[in-house]
Length: 540
Ligand code: G6Q
Image 1: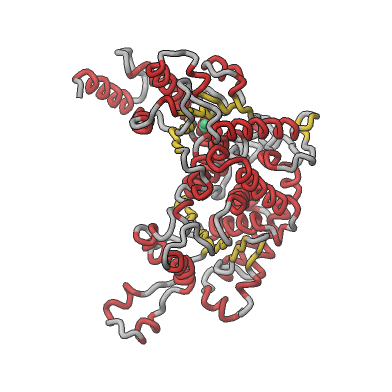
Image 2 (image 1 turned 30 degrees about the vertical axis):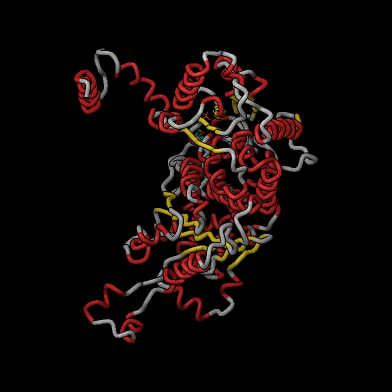
């Protein structure tokens, strides 16, 4: 039986019919305790979900549905290393990467914690050598530029965290992320850099991804063209991968390879060696604090009752809007310029995980699964797309993320900034009524345009400061929310056959673009490729 046929889902449908017209204004008036009743705090992190279109009854019914889906049991299965990634036959153990070394976790009968600890030790040693200038380029200069070449899960996580933790950087090192196979990305990144001071991290779980390998080979050519010395490769390239043969074949000494394992999914790999660039940027101690933050949230998710469990509550709220209110998207709105890349990172984490349309056992699904994730930091978004969130025809649940302390306490910037963080959710929830507009003497014809319906839901997430620890908590919170939603929707969140498809399709067309072979695609693709071939001939 599909979950949307279950008595628990049907009860939610009936409840939805009862409360879909209820306004947040009325819910707040009726219950002065609403803010504290619908907030959860974990350590320093406050998650206020009182501005959601829910009552006690909604939460009760959502939690019953979670129980029906055996969410607690499924959480335990993931943490214990069961092979829950069914289509790839793999365990899902990114949580082991930040586990305490003294708590064993077993995969195929062997404890993986010593392996994880050994790689972390090597990463620390390497980071210290780069950071203190002991590791030098082939001509004896210290490394100043670090370029991570990777894509998808091997790019978005380290890039996002490196930017987010800029205040913790060793500032004489510069970090770059090259992902796109568009040559522009590599060329423009390298344009002003000195090869003698540049280190490449080739980050690829498989070490076969076309974009990454193409960029890696071009980077190698850049170093060799400059150095005329094949030994320079050992000084300027390190690898992060699960594929030791591939790394060796490329010409990187396995001594300069940092390993991870196939029980770490690409988009969940930022706490593996894929985070090497992060450690280089912020140093081993701050990196340790980052992992501790992840671990703390892992523990919260693993051990807390569903009703008090932050990722679980966020997952249930997402289900409520996605499957009952018909919301198609979910906005991530960090009030921190340092978190500029968070929406993009979560876009992959969420959409690649839960963009599925069959159940675990392969049956087509008749209900909605993962939402479209998007967003921008405040306040920029306010001057761009918030209009639609406030007055458009679509319901868009939002996550507002803010911090009490700024790393850059410049005049009254942070006060002004955070005033927006508080004002926007308030305006979304409560709107502006015709009555209020009349009292303010708004001319009659303008009233329909200036009226804000309100009743637009959001979560406010408030932490003291964007520290490595807080960031770890925040990312793990989203990772686990995504996992919990996968369970509620009965889908497999840890495979990505759609990504594989892209990898295969382009492979077939590559040789056709530089030959005149007969084309056997549909007529549109044939015409487009033919035109491309002709345009290339004319030299434009
Ligand atoms: C992530 C996906 C995908 C992957 C990239 C890069 O979960 O599998 O985004 O990370 O395709 O793959 P490699 O790390 O193998 O190069």
